[in-house]
Image (cartoon, rainbow, N blue to C red):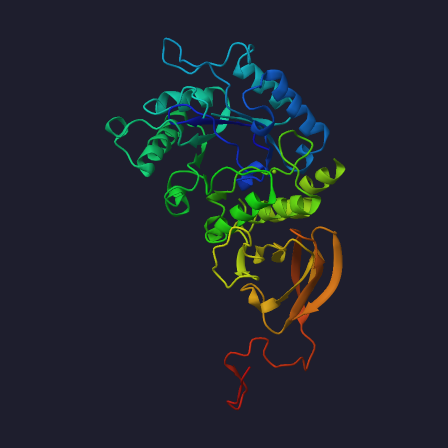
Length: 420
């Protein structure tokens, strides 16, 4: 595991909201426990170390969660006479390097973010990125807060982020060290999934998340239209996972909603005992961290609504994607009551016609036989999820009818067409 730290800085100094705890970078583990929701600015080096110790003792490090993030308020309100950002003397009296050394000793990395009007980095990009690297950070999450007047900044959205992106590249060239990973946080303004991958490795796609089902459904809905943008080289950022009742400030999602939350955030690549079961589901994590396939699941059918319907309360329900071990399916019941969920296998572009598939349930951790052509998930709980891995298991039984699973242009050897 590469040891490193994460820092977040705003353009002029504001807090940066931690993204989903599912890893935005495949090579850096699967996620991080959020902190801003629980503590806001009421943080100090003891709180950070206690969080790191909990992550290790609860087994999160063992399944790949390798970062602790500190979300803002880590610095003094003003730079020092030399113009550098300095750690807050009361909250972090030992300094950043002493703190990061202790976290390293636990086998973890750490991260810092900021939108609470602490010093930001506009016109200080080169200075600040070198300081962050010297402090041991390996990722910068950069908020679009505290933006200067137009007559000062004279840049558009892309230009503002290009300045820091260029500073990161320059520092890597001069220091000989790997470039700091760059996470853009401007809440989906101006469609960053189109242009941000040329500047950094992740980009926020929506506004901040709230710990309730309407917020989750809305974010799933919005991301359904550009889930394709995630791959090994860049990731949609759906904001933090907020189903962890083992931390404070994460709301009161039901167990089924929490499972849906974690599954959707993990499969879109974009972190009580029940909660531990959710966050430590290694089969879900394995899909997110697949070393061969880096793309996300995407919708193949919207379900309740016609395909491509933009609906905050009822987003797309039927999703699929590739993995090194088979085809992944995610079914989300957006209704307020249990429902059966049916799909034809070949609705997914990754399924081969004329084949049967072995089916693995990634939440019950059971192998459930083979399936031919169609599948029905029975009584999916309200706001619940089904996560499946289908593996090719040979030819489907001879004589399976109709002769084509999709009847459009289904044609026999003699040219006879079978109409549906």
